[in-house]
Length: 251
Image (cartoon, rainbow, N blue to C red):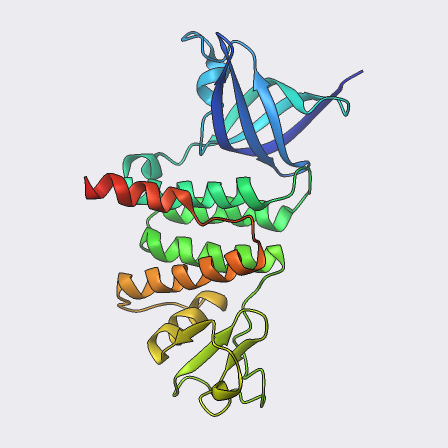
């Protein structure tokens, strides 16, 4: 017997199934990540099929049965569809990368309301253009690393405990954390961090404002976080959405 459940959800991904249906990956507020089917969702007259679309923030009702991997969505209503993200290619690029991280690295059925609320928050900020999309993505990535348990150790030198690190060249070891210029000779360096990059990483970690930051520096911070995540999650091959958009733009 199935339970009829109601929850909020963000559509992470969708694919065609059979002749008329779609299968979607959802990140839900109360039941974590799950897979569900919208029967007849590809029918042009299907309101449900149109609503259950990538990026959309929904209130859904679904039939949950523990013995099956794919649940059945019976109804949905839009809370927000973030229209400005869908109109802007740059926003789409980074919003898709966010969905990819949540879809590929979040554990099935693991409830994380903080992450769910963070996902809604960052999409709302992107939709309102509160900051450039690349900065908002970097902020989410830093937050996401912390939620996964792989947060960056930036507060003090991992060897001597020195806390004033902003005026020197630094080294980062993915296992041990950050090392000041006096201690870096004693550790194998995973990533070199100059003063400008360190300032950006601190702003991202502690959610501080950034004034007139070069996008290339933000991209370097993203690359650092991506390499950090690759080190800790061997199956993680990088953020494919960013690579795909780069390839499309280069053609």
